[in-house]
Length: 144
Image (tube, rainbow, N blue to C red; front, side, top):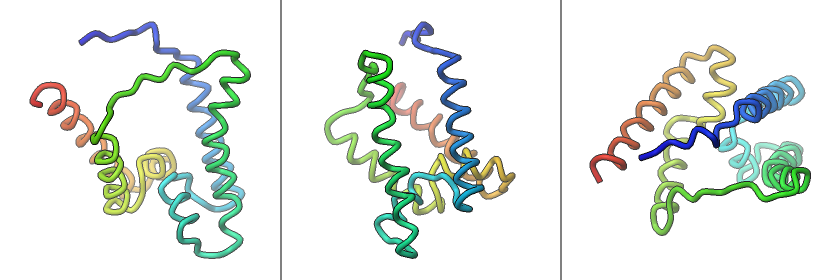
């Protein structure tokens, strides 16, 4: 296995991280909501209140249209490297959805917002995410 260090772009990573942090902060300040995508999508499927849906739809639209805007501004497509195919993708999606239901939130909600609020529950969840990720990568790369 080789690692392509040329593809790591620290400045783009820093800017992206700052943008995510600012977006999470603004969502919390303006709407009192945590920026976790599973909760945002869940609120579209089963809204608690009718006026709670528009901002969620705008958030999802921005998440989908944002990469297209970058492609337009940069003038070239973003490199996409598929990491899985076939039956692996829907099975992985199901397992992620199951994990967000069991963990009462997703990696973005716990990792970005929960840790920033010093939530012990989020710290435990993020620890479990990391342990599970390390074990999964080891099994997929070295056992299977």
